[in-house]
Amino acid sequence: AQSVSQHNHHVILSEAASLELGCNYSYGGTVNLFWYVQYPGQHLQLLLKYFSGDPLVKGIKGFEAEFIKSKFSFNLRKPSVQWSDTAEYFCAVINQAGTALIFGKGTTLSVSS
Amino acid sequence: GAVVSQHPSRVICKSGTSVKIECRSLDFQATTMFWYRQFPKKSLMLMATSNEGSKATYEQGVEKDKFLINHASLTLSTLTVTSAHPEDSSFYICSARGGRNEQFFGPGTRLTVL
Image (cartoon, rainbow over all chains, first blue to last red; front, side):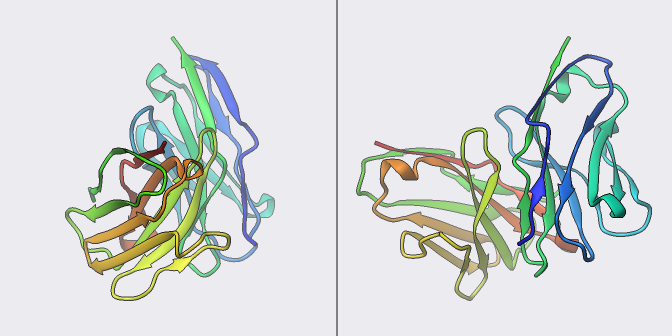
């Protein structure tokens, strides 16, 4: 069965530090990949998505992610984090049937000012 | 952007009672909606896929007689937790599928069963 692994459970950074959150997926075929963010007390919001084309995807709020097919990875990056980036981040992949999202366990990002 | 609402946002009920949660797509039609359960410090677990006008598809391990799903219109799906027990206490989130497989999430419903 498909799965998504997020290796970092909790990341703590100071403002202006660079961020990279790891995401690996198990399916070897065509993949649609997503990063969602959940700010405290708010619902899930889409940060960025990859369907095809340029493997470097730019999202909202200065986030980007790179799809590396050979590594089955879709890591999320931001060059300089802000206190307001404190949130839960989820990587997700569309399942093989193309009908539903499979989520990773999430990474909690805490940014201190 | 596409907006999905859920009602109620929070509900507390006694053990043995049933609770209905509504999920609405406010500015678009969604033939497919999804119901997730989110445990503390855990990821979202897909419970079922709700298709308008047909029976829901449940994920393995999810009791369809306990979690009744109805998707009677293109903008409304309901999840009814029947005979709720304390172990059903959780955060339930719905999403509605828009174009290109993108899902728009509701704000979630916190269910507490006493």
